[in-house]
Image (cartoon, rainbow, N blue to C red; front, side, top):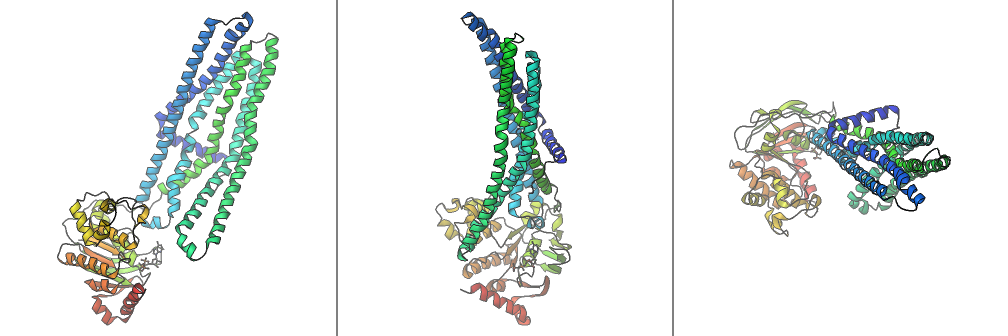
Length: 594
Ligand SMILES: Nc1ncnc2c1ncn2[C@@H]1O[C@H](COP(=O)(O)OP(=O)(O)OP(=O)(O)O)[C@@H](O)[C@H]1O
């Protein structure tokens, strides 16, 4: 995020964005402004009551040597009424203003998150997680934080107008002092915020970078330690931490110059008012109450005037935050889902026809693929690293759409299936397992209605019952962030159970059993293959790396450079393709090497 210079067009755009927010929360915002106006008017009224009490209670009491009781009671009632109304104004402004802000933040967070989920994997692979987190958090907050001081700034206008009227009724000469001090205060505030804002924005950016570097170092702690890179990592962190320190000091310098001026200016005004006012009171031109009233106004109006500065200072952040969230909200490339559902039940037939796919235009990763997965069979795909196996798995699960050709399930193009219909039919177990910070049960069901007997069945099938039962609370055990309390093989078994519990009609395993020991893997896959062969399981497509797994498949697709180089049973391919035989041999050598 680059610091935006507060130019006029930024101010104009900023107010445009603020308008969008106000329009979205019209009623609540209006109420917050009413609260703010009441607060402003009552602040001025307070000064007036003080003036009135000076003239009608304080001065007569000194003059007559006894308290004017009737007037004192009236003054007390006036003070109390004004104080209550003022308190009501503050509560409404703060409470409703806060609600407006939090509602807008929540609404835009929801929109951004919904958009993320609608955008295709192709978009996600080009946007790092850190950036997405920042969009949903910091950018949304930066856009709307202007809404916090906004009702106060609007109310301050009403306050200043009433203050000037109140001063005019007190004394014209003292009003002139106000007419110099207030605008001066306003101009200094605006200048202050304009100087401060880019520095604060920069510090915020750097805070993000500091946590990103720290996050990366902690995440990669193993690499850092094993390769002895502690010093380099510390130096990398120190560099950004020092930049952040300098940015904070730069912002602090601006504050140290302006804060005293802004604090001092109203006091200077009070001094002038007292000097001028006392002279005029002694000359008999005005009452003492008028001097007290105007002097008091100077002390209370100074602070709210700052709200203007805050609003103007926030606008550049508003614009930057808005642009960043709009980049997500207007991102295109959605994969629209159809409305069809797949008739029938049981394992599906998959027809892949003329499929091509490229991550980078002109450089196809998969090209001209034609094959059929017969219902209720197990097909393994074998190929060198980078030959396109995972990409093919993503296409079958419609995480991406092919650039050419089609993929049909029981004759229905996957693009015409509804989102839920597709999720009901196909399950993909990816290379990297994700475990939620939740219980074993919820990690498997993901909210689906699954009874205990079925849960037990899939845990048995995936050879997970043993270790799950050994956990402190069995299936109710909380697994911690990313399931760090489990071994890689245990995580993979839960991921398999998660897919199987949904009774998919097409199961895609993308190297999903790599962390299992060969014996456990063989048992799981044999059970799966036999249920499939018995007409009770899904069609299985497996990206495989072990000879034993590959040998279980009814058919093997041998992928080379994104094309099918050969296909047949494992035995047939070993016999006719030395290249294939070499790859499979090499797989086992690398995988089983100690
Ligand atoms: N998100 C991406 N953006 C650009 N290119 C990609 C992306 N993902 C994969 N590729 C490229 O596409 C090609 C095929 O990748 P893919 O992951 O499908 O291969 P694979 O056969 O599964 O490899 P491995 O056996 O190493 O998992 C590779 O050359 C890879 O660099």
